Length: 196
Ligand SMILES: [Cu+2]
Image (cartoon, rainbow, N blue to C red; front, side, top):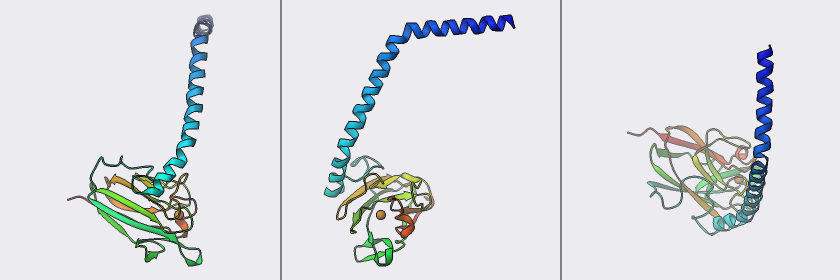
């Protein structure tokens, strides 16, 4: 017991010694981290509307996921349109004239570099994400494939695109990641057929 007390006492003393010795550097480090955090928040807030503008301008913007533009040439380009439909339904379609709720089934092959272009034909902000399962909010995004994330969806009349590798075979889904839009029919099946 005595030995344990001695050790505990020694440890406390050493901790105090360390605290005293590193008090000033630690305070400076904390101040720097706080400053970086605040500047990061400020810059992030300023960048959000810029990202939105790019999204409205063309395929270069509106990402939020996938690969940087120009890094890989897509094997497949899918252009998909989305909007609100009569009766409180929302939908997707491969042509602006044929938007259904739910949307059409999309098929790609495992390993393909896929580009999805999403065009918002609606009056509300929308987006598109490849997901594990259709959810009301915060679906699990697959392949980092998201156009118009919930905090910065594509504005009405705007469009955006994402390039990604469909690296895993399986039966997945795509949906609008804006909260509550998925369950209103703004989803479809996204099938990745096994390679070979
Ligand atoms: Cu939507």
